Length: 461
Image (cartoon, rainbow, N blue to C red; front, side, top):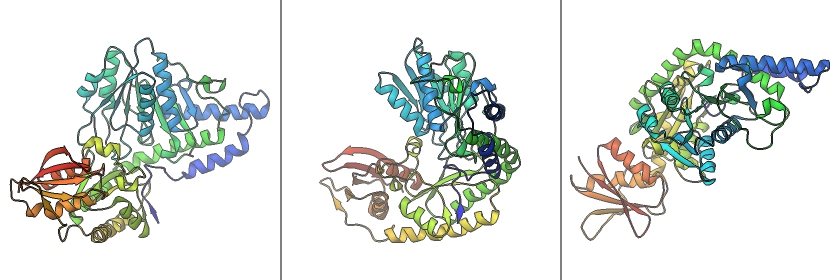
């Protein structure tokens, strides 16, 4: 098996494993105690904090260890909003933030706060001027990821941080995906990250809060971690997280160019060898190890299972792989195809032969899934409405069937004519416009229908 999903969670780094074992033996005592075992534990904790702060680019006393990256995000947002309550209750986020940020924003809105979501371009990046325009006089906090978790697009953090600074608004950066590759540029105010993203142990996050940022810890607090993260510190996990972050950074400097070359190979070969595919995310301003693409006429869940069966572990943002049957909020915000979505994130040290083997296997796997779904061969039974327009009834059918049936009949529509696709699958709202973009057809819009919604497409060629 080949593991190509480090964006979800990276395997434990050898340095993390060594540090974890050593600190289990030496760092089990209470670091708040004055006896020898406590002093030893405190020395390990302080050394880990200094190492992590150096990697983040902050002072050690600005850095707090938390039980997870999501905990760091939630604590950072809640604390910054509470600390700046007098300034206002307005929160600004991008539409492609990690779910932990969006969940915190939803909780803030439910409690009476205001939230503005800044849209992104088709590449997945926000425009700095659009983000700056969302800031208001009552904005208490702004949030922006350093790089997107699903498509790898790097965000213009430095430019946005400058706009926030000019407006007097603190910026919280979710650096979970990028911190292992280097420090986050720009004059940010708060930063959150998670150790399992860079090869540290799960259950360790970090939150940096710059001096001068108004911050009021929410919920019960104790004497641990400057009162910002209650509970006994997981010293072995913290030590392993800090040690692995430093080790990964050293390796990343040498590996970045090699992995970027392998990702370029994937991006090019996928387009050449797999028909009807869209590679998504910014082609240049992206993480070096991550590539995402979507395949028309493919069930995402089936595609992932088939890739797993032939030895490759990858991830997906397709609605077909979700219990809610809704597409990834990131792909939806970008306006790109969600069906048949595959995210490949390469681990440090990956062999080129493994990447080549994946590229050799992929076309056959995609073709096999498409054959199972009958895409697109013989057309479905289609009717015409009172105006003579072709109508495809895909109500009750899930992604990617509505798009498959649209593709089967588009050739029967005269150039300039329209076809109405009836569907009640929420993914159709994203996938049909994306199909039109890919195939050079015009998406006219969505109309109400007796059953589901009617998506109108005009044939241009």
